[in-house]
Image 1 (tube, one colour):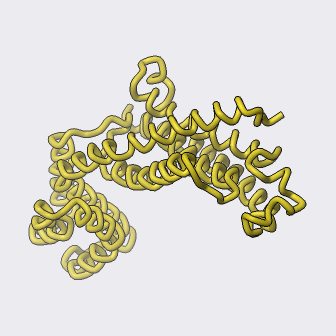
Image 2 (cartoon, rainbow, N blue to C red):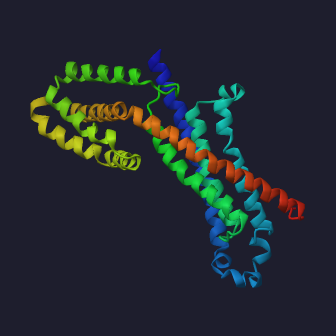
Image 3 (cartoon, rainbow, N blue to C red):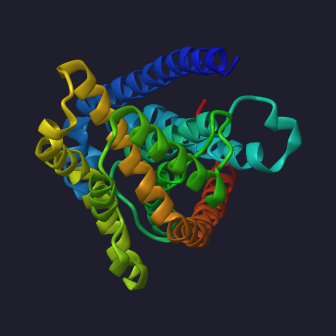
Amino acid sequence: MQLNAQAQKKQNDVVFNFFLAMMYTAAITVLLYYLYDGLSFYLTPFIERAHHEDYRNLRPAGFRGHGLGILGTAMILLLFLYSARKRFRVFQKFGRVSRWLNIHIFFGIMGPLFIILHSTFKVNGLISVSFWSMIAVALSGVLGRYLYLKIPHNILGRQLSYDELNQKKMILNRHLKKKYHIPEKLLSQIEQITERRDMETRSTLAVIFYLIKEDLTRRSRLRKLIEEYSAELSLESDDLQYFIKIILLKAKMDSETFFWKRIHSLFHYWHVIHKPFAYIMLLIMVVHVVVAVMMGYTWL
């Protein structure tokens, strides 16, 4: 039953990832086309743009410029569906949180890019506060996504507790000992690679940089370690590849267990920083839209 559920999950993930890839492809294609098509205007000094042949079309109040603003604004508003998914029961039956997060990230990346084209790379006055808040939201969103991926989840997308994660780690260790007769020394060395006791007292920034560095170097360090024990383990080529995958999974799990509390704390403080910028961006954006409409700047 569990295997069928996992197979169905993988199939659904493939379909969703394809759909998401198509969304990115379409949005990036449109963005690059408009950037290329208006490059001459965008490269023109601000003081001379009024004399450019595409000024009436590409300026923020122009047909295309205004349309890009509407598209970017719509994407930014759709960002908040993710919050609605987490807060309101009516949305909770529609897909896993992780998929909503991926859509949230899509709008968080593409929305600001379309807004930048709408602004024609000219930002000043009150709008600059909203603009830089938008950039802060987008950049902090990248960090938030990274931290979210560091928090282990089950097949349904629910976050695992520390005890649940530790139990999975112990089961995996028993599996390695039983199937591969892995030496205790090797298990200890793997844990030493991922568990840095000195990180418990280091600054938040130091921990983040360490986690990124660990993710980038873990595979090569573990492969080197496994090579030292390859003769003792006496594994065939196919078994060795599977063994490496299991060891990588163990190392990842060791890291997640060791940094569980720290990552959850970081994720909490990330929300504290991320949300105010989002609300500032939204508030000033609404003011901007209302003022523009009141002054007669409508698209059609």
